[in-house]
Image 1 (cartoon, chains in turn yellow, green):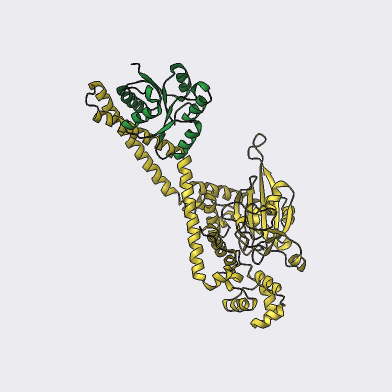
Image 2 (tube, one colour):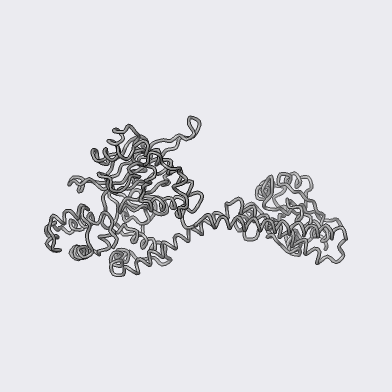
Length: 439
Length: 129
């Protein structure tokens, strides 16, 4: 069974919710209390057999502990429930974990079907949008209709007008010849255009999603850029299957250029030493290297796995419109696949407080809310210099919470992924009703 | 009997010529303008009995021309036949809102054009075929 990095956190939350002590749980599943403690702090991986025992004692489905109700499978099922013609009742939604636990195969099939449906809907939207806005297609369509209209009317005149004068007859025959050639040329150009589009586009993902798929496949780290003499950026994306569209390759090149600049500012050996000494504190790291917080945020999210002191983390970046322009998910922190994110994320607060660092503990909504430490910061960019527009860019780094009792039990900001699947009914930031029950 | 007058605003010369031929044979007097920007002054100068207006025109779109005409009291009732592309329902809706009297989708049968004009112009002004 797939494990998220926060399986232990969910076990601890479930145990404390039931009022059990670590020793009680340890006894019930036949391991030591110290071992349970390590598991709960995500320092030991839980085997399938032990997970089953823990789930039985805690009255939870093993998959819910392993993946968390915020996992992709659950999110897919909730989307399926939200997208269907017949509404799924609240009572049934509340039994989603039981459904996944009892019928994992069917649940996976349903979630996979939902994902496919959503992808195909996007393809349709994309093509519809393209038909409506693509200047080449619009012009071609106009050409075809005009040529066919001219042909049809002219041919009908020739057939239906018995006493047509020779001069008119010759003129209309010339029109038929001219419009036929025009139709043939337009059709040829259109076929060529559509062929090229088909080869260039997978049609199943936005350019940003393609870039994310590529980075995920690279484990969010581009080793080549750490070298003293890194290769040409284009070589990193040569033949990469995930980057199927020209737009995605353009985004990827821009990302590579940024990562390369950050790597030059914060070289891996120095960064590794600083992390070991200071931990993943962006402000301390920025002060150590004399760089901006944004540079540290991005650099932390681009480091290789296994650097001492580097926890599993996520990074989201948005522009001034709130549109997410970069999404590296943190384990268990559900990022909305479509639509807008939760307005209570510190990321968006940072937009309204440029240049002011924000650190906030957040509880991500779910059956078992998960706690994270977030750092958010917004800084301006002026790509056009003094004469161009100033563009604001906000970033939010998402880390596991520090392992201290105060932090584990202290107050935290209640957030969600997106309104549609967030169970906090009374949330002040709610934009639309949720399909979930109240948390 | 005096011929009735149709003004055609169409930028495709072959379509315009075919329509002119068809309508002349059907007893209409036909004037043609190929640019949207010329349309309003032509309506003003020629005072046609009916206007055939292509939707996609250079200079000024058919919708824009129609909106400007309908804003004037002397052209509020002028019958206007819009030529649209088949399947472009959004264009039709926009033209309807702007005050089109009727629509004809391209490509069309010549007989359809004559019938449509006959329907939107008052019977007493319809020319004899």
